Image (cartoon, rainbow, N blue to C red; front, side):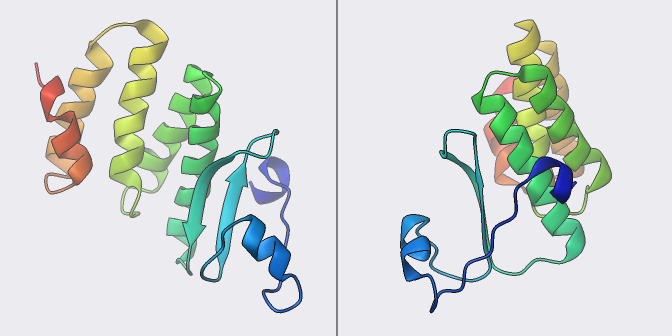
Length: 137
């Protein structure tokens, strides 16, 4: 996924301080996902285990697609996070945005209602569940 979806760049804080300033990196490692115009869409700070890191990268791709109003692609990326990385720290957030993407794509409330149900079952203590509580049917 990394080599097909991202252009990795490495900067050393002591050797390239201007790069760190440009991206407002305050801790290492910092991963910044930018769109083709250089606008930040997602940020990952600090070390993560592999599963969580992959989930964060996929969430970043979802946010990028969402920002560009590509609802189907966004929904697919968010679904990948919630299905393939359900124990990750961003799974509930991905589930939430999956529902929002489904709503945006169809202009129908069903994806939101289903998302509220899934979040209540899988992530009852998540702040994303609280945010989706207004969608319950």
